[in-house]
Length: 294
Image (cartoon, rainbow, N blue to C red; front, side, top):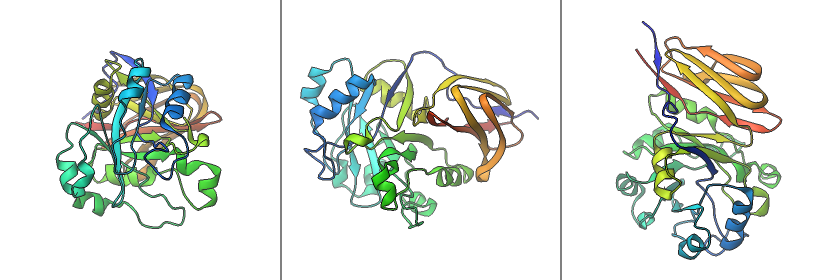
């Protein structure tokens, strides 16, 4: 029986816009060095379509910035920080950080919820695990597969680690359908735009961005971009915007196929999911998983 791959990008209506779902400003996060106005000005100059503020256990007021930059989708949010961290993002958000994390997630069904830097230490120190996430009772929408702030030279020198695909594959292999995101987690000037998401939105509004991301209509990147994707039942065809080394990954993190160049193809077998990732001189790329159905 042929495996049919569920393609989250099958509906091509809308436009691709760029942005991060995790970031901080000096006014409301003691760990950040850049003021809110300066941060958004930088992003506007970079040509992003949306910016998210997720300060630690506080909701940063974006009303003045929204009035100054009406062309940007500016998303409210916060980083739940009294336990292992999760970001909550929406057009507007309530102070759910005042609640136990389990209750906050139960009440956040309309928001985008993303597990932050799930394995942040190169030493292997435990942070988020499958068991800890399962114990929450409500699964978040997604997980950071790359965190840009943890990938800067100063963070790497401190033993931090930015790449989290092994735990993503562990969760997917266990049957949990979490989308993958790359966020710059901006704190300092060197963080800006070093990791981002391309989101296929039907409307360039905070509501439109969140709705698209919750449906998996996005991919994660540190610079390498998707040029084309075609799925024909059990076959996947990927084209990138620059040469790279590409991998098709399946359950257990198994490498199903690999190649070099900018065109890649794979015919699925009985895998419960297939995902594509790549790395080249311009950066990394992580497409959302495509789940197999008979």
